Image (cartoon, rainbow, N blue to C red; front, side, top):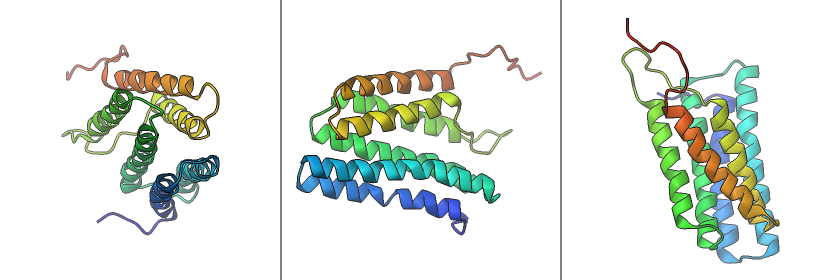
Length: 178
């Protein structure tokens, strides 16, 4: 049974609340004000990603459930925002597909059970850089900042690169079994 009785896990779950807020705000009216409200909700939710990790380490409440839940909620938040931007015709569907496909494939890769290591594998630095680039690009696109689309393309490239780095054996470590 997952342990929901930790502050970090509740902070992570609270991040989910921003998704319907962002959808509702932008579904009714696409204006400068609604984009600003949606961006604030999105950025607050994105900042809780740092907060839940900080609290988990500080309060010694790191859990396998939290390690699973945190990246899942991050992905839902990013995918929701990308779908809104797609609906607003600011980004192409194929690029959103590439990002979603990478997220699903790497989540499956990271969480795939292995007889020798049945635990969840944490994100590497490239995954974290990818996430930050996606958050910045989404916020810039929502606010219609000049060159926001360039930030989005950088996020797409980092999404692909981080996925490849994750699955390709780029180190010289000995991976033999014996």
